Image (cartoon, rainbow, N blue to C red; front, top):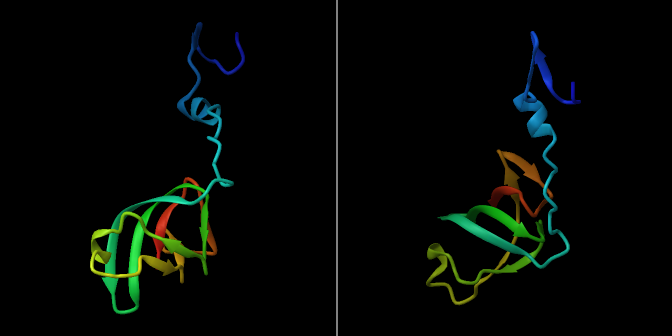
Length: 107
């Protein structure tokens, strides 16, 4: 019997779903690249602007000054498209930085 195969009675079966998923290599995260982030939603609140999205390349950390281009809908009337990152969250958990592949909120 080949390694990774499951045997049911006299029949060799394919690997279990869990084994098959565990065998998939994790994709390489492009952390050394410049920041690229897709903005899924943008909310304007009293404390500032909250954006949700996925970091595609690079990383973003608290204190970074970022330029939004093209500007999201909630910022169309602002003359300055630079923002300072004050907080980052993922699943309601605070984070110090988000790297390529992470999905979260930034304020």
